[in-house]
Amino acid sequence: MRRAVSRINGVQGELLPPCDVIGPVTVEFNGSETSTSPLDFRSDTLTVPDERMRTAMAEAEVGDNVIDTDPTIRRLEERVAEILGMQAALWTPSGTMANLVALSTHLRRGDRFLAPRGAHVLVNELGSAAWLAGGMPEALDHDGGPGRPSPATVRAAAGGSGPYYTLRTTLLSLENTHNSAGGAVTPPDEHALLVAAARDAGLRVHLDGARIWNASVALGVPPAELTADVDSVSACFSKGLGAPAGSVVAGSAEFVEQARRMRQMLGGGMRQIGVLASACLVALDRVGDLADDHAKAAELAAGLRERGWEVVEPQTNIVLAAAPDGAGLAKTCDRLRTLGILALPMAGKVRFVLHRDVRQGDIAEALRRIDRGLGR
Image 1 (spheres, rainbow, N blue to C red):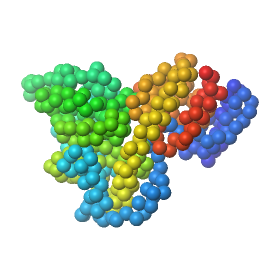
Image 2 (image 1 turned 135 degrees about the horizontal axis):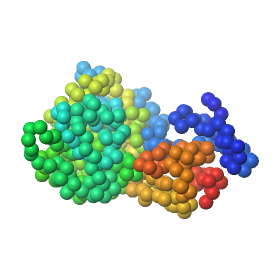
Image 3 (image 1 turned 135 degrees about the vertical axis):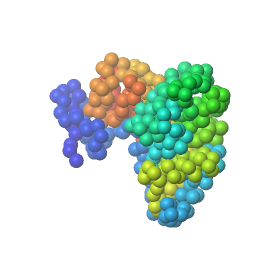
Image 4 (image 1 turned 90 degrees about the vertical axis):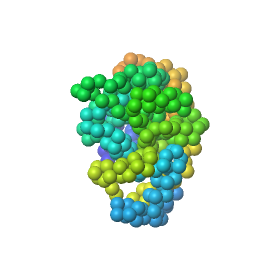
C-alpha cells in the first residue's frame, strides 16, 4: 500500500486515493508531520462484521437455497416479513437487485413509473429500471417535504386515461429514508397520503426502504407503519447494521413467488446463503443502535455549523454540508481528503455518513483536523 502524504500550508505531496483501501496517512500541519488514521465518512456500507456476527456466520445452518430453501434464509425471510408487515419476503444479494426485482415484477415494458427526484432507483442503479425492468422513469420534485412529492403532484403526474399511443403510468416508487435528500424521513401520515394518491390514480406502490430501519428509529414507530398499503418494499442489512451483504424485497405471497423467478433470471439465486443470512439476523437485533448514529450525525452537523459550514439539519445518519469558503464541491472533498477525512459528494454538497464503526472521539478529531487544516 502506498504512503499517502498531504501537506497543509506547505507543498502538497501525494494525495489520498479516493477509492483505494487506505492505510495510515501522513498529514503536515504548518511544517509538522503527523501520521494518523483516516476518518472514513463515505458511507454506512463501510461497517464490518464484528466477532458475534462472524461467529454466527461460521455456525450457520445452511442448505441449497435454489433447489430447496436454506433454513437460515427461511428464518430471516419470515422474521423480516413480519417486521415489515408483509405476507412474505425474499432475500437478495443487494438493494439494487431488490429494487430491480420489484420494478421488473410490477412493470411491463414501456410503462412509466414515478419516483422522487434524486431517488436511488433513478440515479444510483445505472439505469437498470429502464434498461432491464423496461420502465420509463419520471422524477417528481420534493414539494411535499424533503425527499418526497406532494400527493397533488403524484395525482397530476399520474394523469388519466388517454389514447393508446400515450404513456401508461402504473407505479409510484417512494424512498424512505431518501438518501440524496440527506437521509430525510417520510412520517406515517405523509406516507399514507402519498399511497392514497397513488391508489386514486390506479398506481401500484413500491417502497425503497434501504434505510427504513433508520426511519423507524428516528420516528419511534415500527417499520410496518412505514410500509402500510404498499405492494412491495425493499430493505437493506449492510447499511449501518454491520452485515457484509444482503437485502430483502417483500410483499404479498403472490408477488414474492413472481419475484423469486425474477431473482433467478437476474442471477440472484444463491446456494448455501444462510452464511450471509445469519449475519442479517444479527443485524436485525441491532436496529435500535442506529439511534447512536443519528446522535453522531447531529454532533457533526452542529460542529460544522459552528465553523461556518452550511448544513442541512440531519434527520437520521446523513449530513449534507457545503464548505463556507465557496471553494466548490470537488475542491472541498479534495481538501478534506488531504486531512485524512473521507467523504463523498452528493446533491451538490459534501455527504458525511455516520455509522457504527465511527468510534467515540472520531467526530471531535475530524473537527480538530478541519480547524487545523481549513481554519474556523
